[in-house]
Image 1 (cartoon, rainbow, N blue to C red):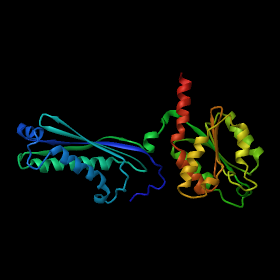
Image 2 (cartoon, rainbow, N blue to C red):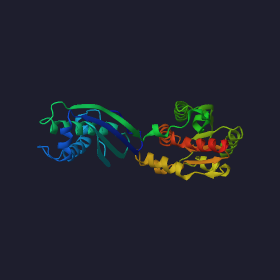
Image 3 (tube, rainbow, N blue to C red):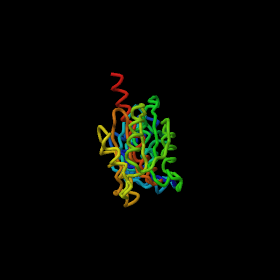
Amino acid sequence: MKDITAKSNTLRSAIAQATVVVSMQETIDAINSNAVEKGNVFEMAKAAGLLGIKKTPDLLPDCHPIPIEHAAIEYEIEGLNIVIEVTVKTIYKTGVEVEAMHGASVVALTIYDMLKPIDKGIEIHAIKLLEKKGGKSQYKQKSDLSLTAAVMVSSDSVSKGTKEDKAGVVVKEKLEKLGVDVKEYIVLPDEPEQIRAKTEEYCAAGINMVVITGGTGLSPRDHTPEALKPIIDREIPGVMEASRSYGQNRTPYAMLSRGIAGMKGNTLILGIPGSTKGAAETIDALFPAILHIFVVQDAGFKH
């Protein structure tokens, strides 16, 4: 099974469709008059479809067990066509499109099974996905924003050459995969004045994002939040609340991070953990949704 532990829970939904085609109007009449010997066709098929949705991971080996939080099955008769529409919703780490399609197929098969004694010409047509929402794909931002970034590593040991930087490299790679142009990657010691001065320099140069990794812990030399607070015009508390919540699901120490986020003018400033894992998880938690900041800015500039 695919590893989804790095994903975040989001509202996910899917709508699938299947069509059962009968061969004569008498079959439709029997359904409408509830004259089918095996029982009420639509009610029986609905019950089977709901079971099908919930049993999807039991039958498809690579599907993750998912908490199904909403399922709806609707029918529409169009001539000799019975159109089935299945909607499934959850708040989870992976989508429900397979569950919706499986539900639609089970509904169609149940209808087929119930009607075959009276109609030998039934066919099942076009089981397909109509709509899928949720997950990071829904929150991808416009690719024409041409965003730039600077990545700064705040570390005494790395700046002295006694330790190799991995966190900054990971952040740089993740940003570049998101289409962000990383203009500069530098290492500075844990000195508030230097961190503050370099951040202000990037802001003045019009860099869209400054990401500082390191200095957000509780050791005597961790000063990144103190360095950044005086130059931030508007702090964004929810950003690091989201990051710590994401991290807390993976390690009980995430609550100790003093990460900080805010805007100086039109530049986003992020002070994130210095550990490789902590830095990587913070980027995973915040991106690409945080790029919506620049979509809003772009819309504002155009107006």
